[in-house]
Image (cartoon, rainbow, N blue to C red; front, side, top):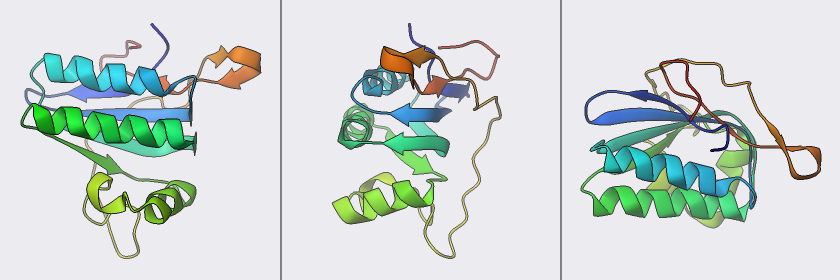
Length: 142
């Protein structure tokens, strides 16, 4: 399994932190991580984007699919701490209202995300590009 989103799980909620690039080659790792948490009975998923350096339309679609999966299970998916580039992507595509947690990355907004981890670890893939790092709170890689 690829090195992927860091998760800090609680009984019915979790934090997935994504680092590096989220693109055609790595978006499935995010979708898989969310689906795994939903199968484990986690209902509310928060995604920390503070270390995500790049996201293309494949990554955006992965966020939207993950949100729909969470809703279908009676849960939610909220994105926190987007970089200015990601905030612009969400605003330009009109997805900020459905993906971003209230006030996340928008002027005057402040969001607290629980959990910690090493968001900097990534693993090279195809042509030297970087995969997103997905980390578990227990220190294991997912």
